Amino acid sequence: MNALTFIGWFYTIIGLLALLAGIRIVKALRAQGRKPGFLDSALFGVWFLGLAGGMGVLLRSEWGLSALTTFCWLLIVLVGVSVVQRFVEAVRMARANVPVNFIGVMFGLLLVAVPFWFLCYMTLSVLKDESTRAAFGLS
Image (tube, rainbow, N blue to C red; front, side, top):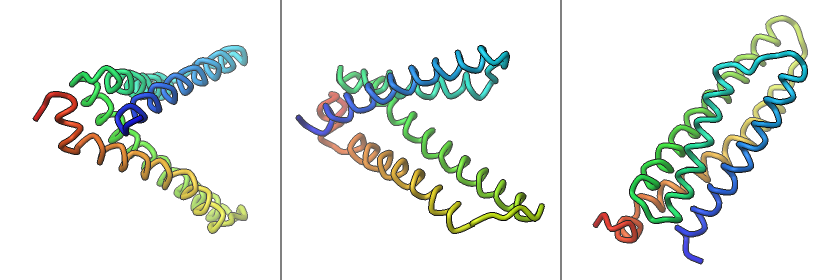
């Protein structure tokens, strides 16, 4: 199996699993009488983009390459925003005299963020390679 096939299957499966998990979360929210917000819908769109990009890469279509590239950049930004948001929340808690273990917060954030960033970086590297462009007929 070459790198493009792996990437295509990986993002197709992960995108599908993320969408299924999102559906379960929305059902649980509705069962509690809460409405999903705009950000929930936006996340569905982002993960659908990843699913579509993965399928497009498997089909070796140009739109799949663009969709997966866009998905990776969106994921890099969203994970970064999440890291900053959680760190700011920890600072607010510390200012309110709530005990916060900043080393634990940073370790936890980096344990999640760094693998996402690395995965996206590696995917973008493969997608920008000349052999990938040739496989998509874009040389």
